Every structure is written in structure tokens, then in C-alpha cells.
Amino acid sequence: MRRLAALLVASLLALVISTGVAAAHAKLESMTPADGSSMAAPPTQVVLTFNEPVGSTGAEVQVKSPTGNNVSTGDIQVIDNLVTQPVGPMIEAGKYTVDARIVSADGHPITVSASFTVTHAGHAPGSVVTTGQPQPVKDNSNVVVIVAMVLVMLVVVALAIVIVRRRPAA
Image (cartoon, rainbow, N blue to C red):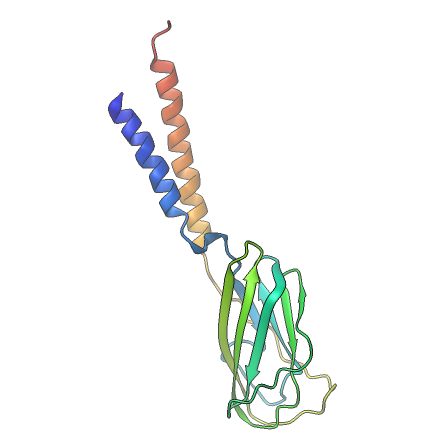
């Protein structure tokens, strides 16, 4: 009986440990323009797409030019899992960096660092520029954790059934 109880405790402990810290937090799925991409025409906005809704309180996105000037303009817009930051004229050719701090629905901060390259600088404010399709970020860590949790729970339930059935009737 002690072995069975120890096995149940060990199974529950493994379940708690296997969930990981970041399993409940929002994760970046894609960014437009895509991280590492190169484009001739500068974008008019940067769009971050997360795997779940995020909060607008405390959200901050900075897009910095090759010389370090912040080209972010206007208010950040957060709708469900999309975060949009308008940018002003990009008058420098080169590598632009995106640094973002977003708060997930569970209250934990998420930091994003990415970059893209503009080969021909300058765009008129308000002009429409296509930035291509966002590149998805592949991350299957949550799937593995969920499958492991389900398997552990099945073992725990099976052991509980065995314990209940083996008890002698009073």
C-alpha cells in the first residue's frame, strides 16, 4: 500500500513539474515584417501575432533604425492576439530592430526581439506598402507537455481504480 501511495505522489509530482513555467504564457506566432526578412519598400506598421489574446495595459513596441532612432509613431493597437505598432518614415537603409514588451492574458510579461532589413529607405507617411506574408514561428513544446500530462493523469486514474477495487469490503 505504501508503494502505491508513493507511486501516486511521484506521478502527481511529475505532472506538476512537467508543465513548465512558460506553458501558460502567450507565445509569438509571427511578425510582419518577418524576423530576418529583407524588403525594398519600408513597412508602415509592425504587426505581432500571438497564439492567444494579450493585454493592452503596459504593451510597448519600439522599432529602431540602424542608427538607434525610434521610428514608432502613434498609439499601439491591441486586438485579441494582434499587436500593431505604426511606424513613421524610415529614411535610413539597413537593419531595423523590433523590441516589444507585451503582457499575456495571465499577467506575465512577454519580451520579443526581432529585426528586418530595409534596402531602399524612405516612404511617405500614409502610403500603403505590402510587407509579404508573416513567417510562422514553430514551437511544439506545448503539445509535448499536454500529451505528457494526459498520459500521467491516465496512469494516476488507473492506479486509483486499482486501489479502490483492492480494498476489502468493510
